[in-house]
Image (cartoon, rainbow, N blue to C red; front, side, top):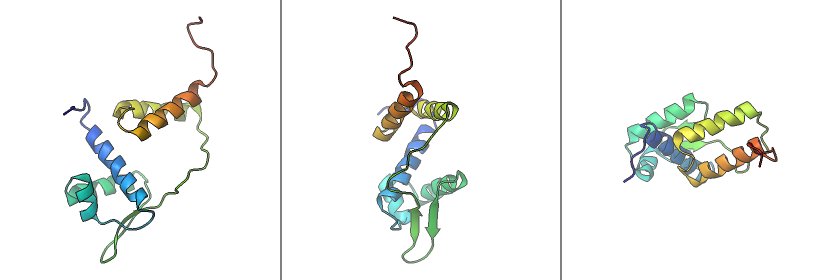
Length: 127
């Protein structure tokens, strides 16, 4: 088992998985019990993670009672997003902090951000 150098990495990875589980449901509710089972954590951990995501502004909707659960209100396809270099750099720093190879999504995002930041700029030192 590989131990993460940062104690918050498992939490970030779990929250990413939680978002992906909800996103894959295509606006159909998923209960805390089912999420806990899929993520291998307690229902309380799911509730805490959802609360953290909500506090961060992630659009998770909740409904109590029969037929209820959690739904994430996101699009299936994203429109082009224009970031300025400092915003892209902030995302690169965040990916480095959690480990840019933590998932295929993180690797892809990192590659896109680096390409956007560097593009066809001359390299240094010059050859």
